[in-house]
Image 1 (cartoon, rainbow, N blue to C red):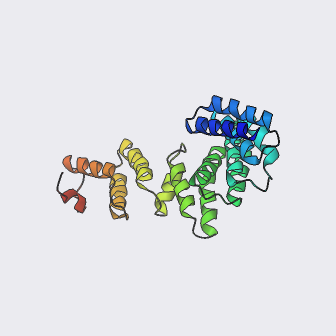
Image 2 (cartoon, rainbow, N blue to C red):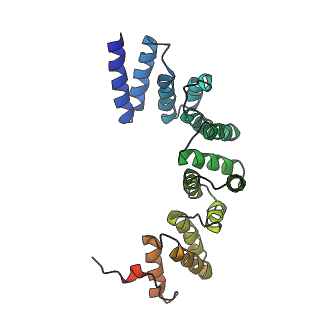
Image 3 (cartoon, rainbow, N blue to C red):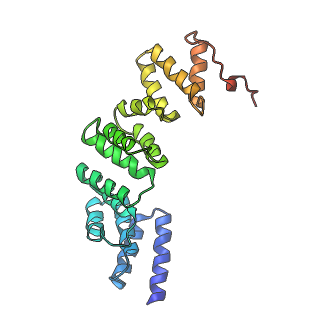
Length: 234
């Protein structure tokens, strides 16, 4: 029996690696038929496979009875949060993501999804969450990374602007603000955003550099002193 289970487990792991979700689900259900007292890892994998197929309710039914299993990782609550989001149960999703963080999540994706769920509930609530993180101390690098990812995924621009205001906007976040300023023909804002980008630790991104050069060509911006502009072309 154990040899058979080992072979099934190897096959379903390959199916998961190949993103063959239906096949993986079938193998998992057969595995659980043979070993209904399987450890959490097996049930957790089934929850993940169902989640990836958009079966959010099925994922909940599998994972909710096991959410207090002492062997769980923070991913269990994270996956439950994703399932609640898929069902538009945003407050429940927020609570799951927060439990995932309390369970020790160090993944930017947990922070990102929490902020997205908050923003979907009420625009501006993601900013308040970020401020609470800052009040508790310097947010982790994972928190900032998740915030930057959320800033380019939520519908509005206020969260991206908040990150820019506190000096944590990356090039992708700045690009979203710059595109909005360009569409609005707000030359002053474009120039202020580009000036801040040039002074950032990483300097201009390739996109920002191209925009600056285009503005210079049109006579809409003064020549930059960015040394990258003078670098030899290869």
